[in-house]
Image 1 (cartoon, rainbow, N blue to C red):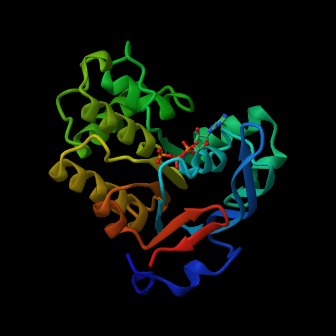
Image 2: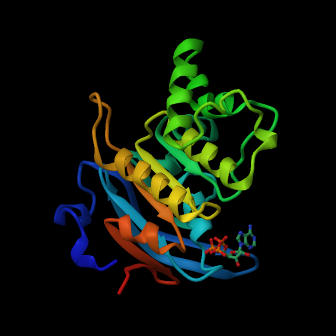
Length: 244
Ligand SMILES: Nc1ncnc2c1ncn2[C@@H]1O[C@H](COP(=O)(O)OP(=O)(O)OP(=O)(O)O)[C@@H](O)[C@H]1O
């Protein structure tokens, strides 16, 4: 949790060429005129896992939505790799999100009338129709989240924690440059949460078979999640500051 655990000193420098995510001077208000945050800066590199903590209602989910291009800031810029989200129209933004971002929502957004395998394969199915490959990769991801042999089950029959794991498998299957996750272990027992956190860490920190490392921003209230992070940042009205 303290800053001395930060992995690479250069990871905190701004606008390095490897940045998977660069955010500058971001502001957001909601409702009539309630400012959630302003002047928010953040750089996250491939291979780095950042945890964001903060009081309930401070704006963590809103920030994640802005980072994914699902919500608009009032001011400031978000870049995914080198691409400024604000410069894209809705179609280009959707394409970028599908290809480069894996998002685990608090509300999961799992499709109840698809099987687990179909739900997990969805990000790949949008760009490829090689059914055997899709099934194999979806099954491998389901195994990674402890749901092997459940690929043919329908999502509507899942428990909350199982649904959360399907959402995680779906967010990671296409090896996104940037993983954004909102309380990804909130519904899991400590042992399953540990397994899922290890999976996030593996995706972020190791290159496998020439596949790229990801960067991750995880919103959390969980101590275990904060403990595996390279940096823990607290969201306040004046932006992000390192956790004490
Ligand atoms: N579209 C909106 N219109 C009005 N208020 C909104 C809107 N979206 C979010 N808010 C408000 O902004 C505040 C921040 O919400 P957000 O969900 O981002 O907080 P959070 O830090 O993720 O909270 P929690 O930890 O409880 O999940 C809340 O008070 C919420 O009611």
